[in-house]
Image 1 (cartoon, rainbow, N blue to C red):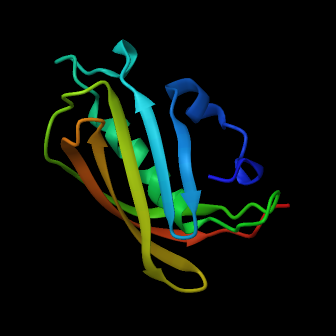
Image 2 (cartoon, one colour; image 1 turned 180 degrees about the horizontal axis):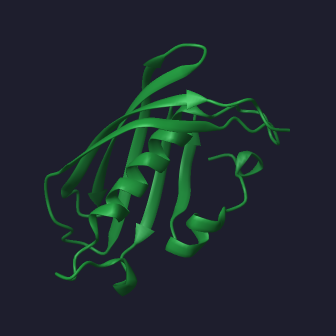
Length: 134
């Protein structure tokens, strides 16, 4: 990822501790080390953590501009999450791709794995672009 294109972490990102580790046209990668405060009553990552990573990776995948300081934002219109496995490693890794869309909306899909390659969750989403921010 080009460091010049990186955005400063936003409040939820800082609170949960995830980072954007890859970002280019139609693609984003988000990583989060597992920590106790992310767990549910079973001690595994709460489903909302998976949903947040999926939503974030898909949203970023559709909002890449390639221009430092030129920010494109989007709102989630629909988010579908499928929980398919459990974390075996110590890090959640989510990769999202923009799969289509037009001038006002876009579609994306993503998957959450761990560093061992275990598939944990998948998701799809529909997003609406917002006016660009300078």
